[in-house]
Picture 1 (cartoon, helix red, strand yellow):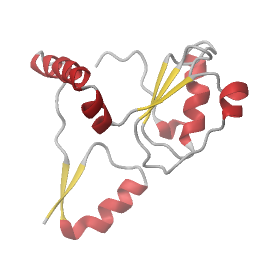
Picture 2 (cartoon, rainbow, N blue to C red):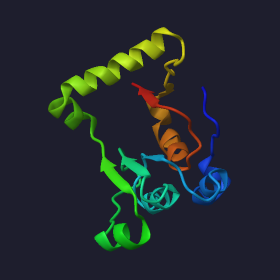
Picture 3 (cartoon, helix red, strand yellow):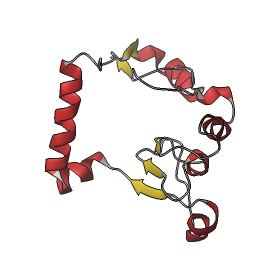
Length: 143
């Protein structure tokens, strides 16, 4: 879909991979959807001073970062993104983003994925697969 590089989190140290691909400078933008222990790795993978880390998920749990970390370890821009807050506080911006998204869908650049649907009785197995990170995309349980 136009990406120059795609990294698999199962493939080892993501920070090292990003730094290798960027000649040691780091990524301009890191989208952090997991939280927890991965936040530190995301901060380390971002370009110093001008890099941005957008935190929009916390499936891995909460993470802490101190002002010492930002001043001495990770000199990057960190922003939290909550879709509900975006809609409430800047509906025009949300509308622009949705307009761009729908244009990409209409042009065939993006294709919505269908969720993996499983019977409710398979719930424990599906949750185990999710925890093992062996699933791709959204999952739904059918009653």
